[in-house]
Length: 194
Image (cartoon, rainbow, N blue to C red; front, top):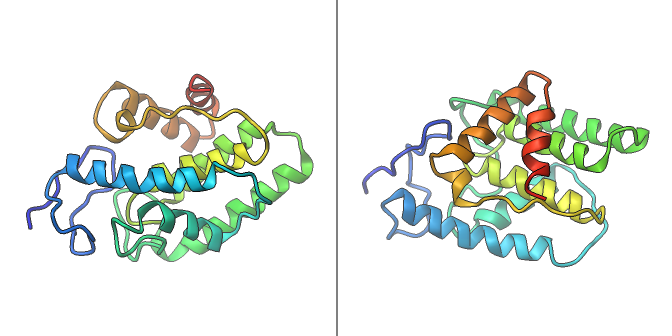
């Protein structure tokens, strides 16, 4: 099977042996298939408010629900390093630190809910725990967080964040600013979508 073309700034897809649908050979076909899978998970998790207990198993469950019809590794942490993200050996530790920070932010209640969701989103992307789909996973987790706190949700620009273009460049630039501790661009990007 031919390799699926890669997008600058995205995790490269250099191994499609775990791709479940065998008919997919192009990036656009993969995007379409994944989008359908992700929409099912989005509808499931954003249709009814439930008690929200965010832990590592829950994060894996969300990812699995988003990509279980696309990739055999859905819901499992990556087993090698890529061009971005924490060292794969450190993923559980980095996620535990994030979850501890989230619990602290909630306890202290000094950070607004939208700002907590932005930080949650950013840190998940930065850790990059899965082989692929990390940005979409981080956005859905942040949306579930907002939804369960009775907040308005951003309307993410879908394919414009997956494919090359100005919106994707703005998003990646905002994530890079957050990497340096400046969350304002990512907050502004997110707020403009609400």
